[in-house]
Amino acid sequence: MPSLKDLKNRIGSVKNTRKITKAMQMVAAAKLRRAQEAAEAARPYADRMQAVMAGLTANAAGQAGAPRLLAGTGDDRRHLLVVMTAERGLAGGFNSSIVKLARQHAERLRGEGKEVAILTVGKKGREQLKRDYGSLFVHHVDLSEVKRVGYDTARGIADEVLARFDAGDYDVATIFYNRFESVISQIPTARQVIPAEVPEGATANALYDYEPGEEELLADLLPRSVATQIFAALLENAASEQGARMSAMDNATRNAGDMIDRLTTEYNRSRQAAITKELIEIISGAEAL
Amino acid sequence: MADTMQFDLVSPERSLASVPVREVRLPGNDGDLTAMPGHAPTIVTLRPGVVILVGADGATREFAVTGGFAEINADSVSLLAERGHPREEITQEVFNDMMKDAHRAHRNATERREHVGEEFVTATAKLLGDMQAMGTHIGLDPNQSTVPD
Image 1: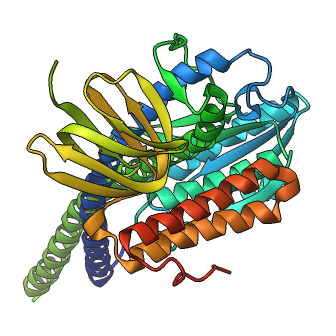
Image 2 (image 1 turned 180 degrees about the horizontal axis):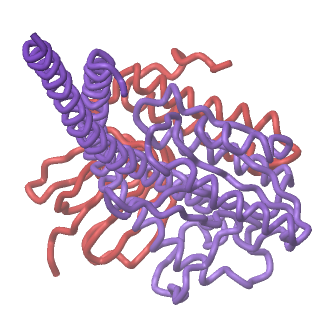
């Protein structure tokens, strides 16, 4: 049985914790709104890019001399996994769900006898993967200095990924991130960016004149499209991170509330017990006289 | 035929302009071109340069873009630029930043010549040249930006 003073201290410290989690939840809510706005604002560009790419890739796919970013290297032995996580924790299962998916992916590929290399974005994923896959790390992109995810960040990552592809380091690149569904649901997603996938149902678009030629245009657009996809993934991730943190902190706040209620009841009960005990002692003392 | 068309200028981060226009003058990779309502559907890549919009009332607006591509239809033009700024917002500082990117791209390409191929190096050199030309056109000094290390 903890003493009254202990209980009082416990209640005080849980109350402080609740204040912190409550504040974190509100900060996350504000950041989430901003992240969603950014994702919304980026949509027109991505949509148009995808529409143009769909027409172009449908034309070029399967043709001899299609760019390597579309046709691939003719092999799929070496894989690059780009694992995008956050710089901070305390966001529920946000980081571990991405890491878990990447881990499954890596295990499956290795089971098939393929080579795996990992490029991490964000500190948390790196920490979690380090023990099992430390030897497979090829590069790390640090986002701790990045306050707001911009296109420049995405292009930096894309340049890194593309440079390694040009150098012939791998055949297939897949990005891992959390797709933002709602505040309570973020879906870990794997998406292959190199070679580019031809969207299903895309039909050759014979309507357009291309200037310069179709092939040059495609060669120009493919790297941009990789950067755009990475940018979209970063934005989804940013929104998901805040969403996950918001609901995790909401839960924590509610838990702290429950705990305070329980501790307060216990505190009151033992206080009452102490009073009753004192009274009994006084009365029985008086009766003994 | 309608005498205006819808013009959209979008960057990866946000939409910069969405207005009806009478004509759009674009800095195409193979030369400048003007798109007016009823233009044949075309997709064209752009070099760094100034895009000029002529609004329904004849007023012009100018945007500086650092390349990208444009999708031209009979009744709309969508310009997808990695970076775009209204001309009045292009200060020496913003321009220096753009020049720095171009310098960096060119230097990276030169260093990895054997991987990326001669064509790519030439392309980045051309990009750098176009960027300088755009600066001179706007009246900014292209030599203030230092090559990044």
